Length: 70
Figure (cartoon, one colour):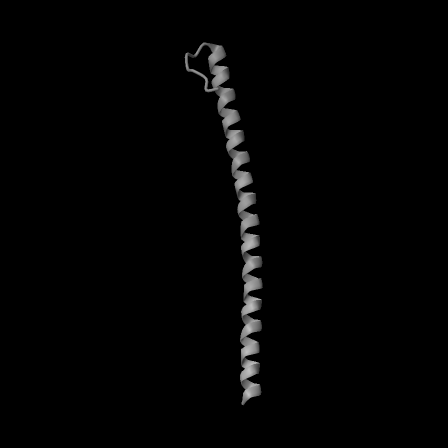
């Protein structure tokens, strides 16, 4: 009986350790994906802002009295 109890304890310990490793890798992958998404969003926002500023500058040159944001 003692040997069986030890085996069960050992199995549960190794299982929990494996789950910790699996969860850690999942979290690492998620954080990498979120970083990439954040970078893409920043690039999109930057491009949109550049386009918007270019349009405002063109309108300002044409004589439109809209103010530019610096």
